[in-house]
Image (cartoon, rainbow, N blue to C red; front, side, top):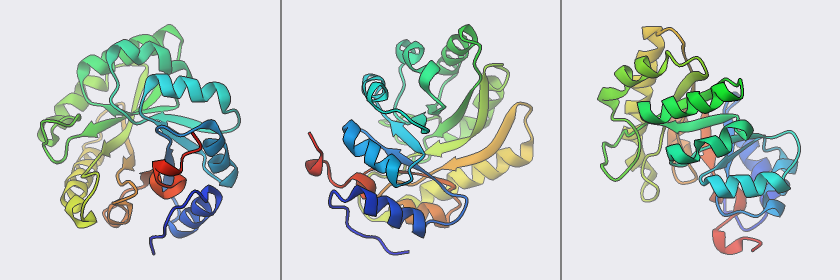
Length: 229
């Protein structure tokens, strides 16, 4: 697979990406700071999942973007913002604490909804980043699995945001090992179906290490200087 430049040609970028990735890999278009016109073009080109990092931005864009598209929350989620997004969200990828899981379960219970979630793993053990430490993940997942309005469907990790893509490989290797361990553990209420790893800079390495969901922003929409703001 060959990387290519993204120069505000959203339709071409999406089609190239979808043609190049292996069958069975889901693409989440990371739409942080993007305008509705850009997002709608990506959807028209074949994007079926949008990822948002901020609650207010997600709510704003949802008012303007209609159609058959799923919404994933992929940023750090504060408990006091959960109520605002659960109704319109198809998956929360960044659950990393019992407190957050409990609040999501509570808010989903109120609207009689079961929401799919991923557990965010801090695979680099970086104190400045969100995510549960790998060694604590199994215990946390067992605690969260009892909540009736949450459906644990896999793991998510970040990896380095820039630099040599090979620097991300150890992060992805560790998360994949944990994913496989949890799959074999067969914890009640837990399905290990989705392994969300890899962004524009690192998705090729992530795919090599078993990712079946990638979160792509710049490679689809171009540098933010090209935004339609």
